[in-house]
Image 1: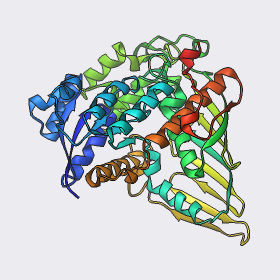
Image 2: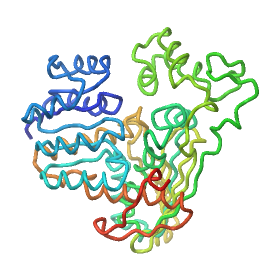
Image 3: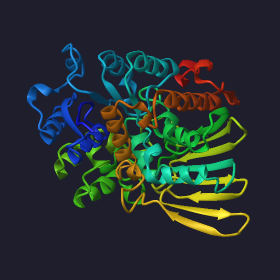
Length: 436
């Protein structure tokens, strides 16, 4: 297949990671431009990919205003709330698009993304990396072969991890639904998308429960300071950032999440960041409002049911799933699949190489090969002009995003929300902010 050219919008953790596919596979892809407002990130990215100064710009509009395509495709990896405008602009110019999840934050914007790429006739791949892991593909094959008969019900857990919850959803960019989006959309649209992919049917009804329970002022320890660096009780706190980030700096673990806190990987820079920046705050003295635990119940077309649990009160780790069928059951931990056959009474363990070969099931570990799988499929689809090679296209992603919005509506309104079978015929599902 021919080599394709890529422009990158947003050189944060996700944009940088996705773009490294071109460095690892120079015969298949090359990066020709980047748009990133932060100078240090932009310059570091440009140096890594050998870009000229004129091809490393602060604003993505500088790329679209050139009046011609400068690349075959674009990776849109901005903050969640800033996805829609660049997608519309690049689609109109004929760029194929890899869009980091979530595709947008409300139904109208999600539909606008789909309409724009379909009108332009370009390929869209949404960053639902869990569809692309070797683990998921092994599970899909197993279910497709009928090893456990018909799927009747599913129980799925996302163990966010206590420090990831504190880093991203209490202190970080996704701590507030009005500034970013809901916890379910930011962190778990992956999972509701994955469930419909694995079950192989669209959801019909959803309900949900959850709240912000622990990371509030009422749980603040007596004598605690507003910042960890000044806190006399930090030695007894699981969320002490001086220890957490300091250990990573000292140990040479300089990737995510430390790379989000500081650009200059020195003790002085880290101390300044923890004294003045958002990541140094006490987790009980922040302005966060997103939930720290949530449950979603789903009924699919055909009658299968699923429960999904997201919780920040765990070790960070692999998602864990149990799938119950008419002939057997599957238990999966992101690395191994344990298949029990009712008739024979035997259990088979199937390795999927999700950890040993392609990394852990976290952002830091490449989502168990999902990051590489996503880019491999997208680059192949663009090179071949074949959108069927993408597993997370516009209509599939629209369905999963509408399900997330419906689940959050169900939580806020304390009711079951019905979903139409066809995504194009769904009712308007408003964001929590629009609901007031």
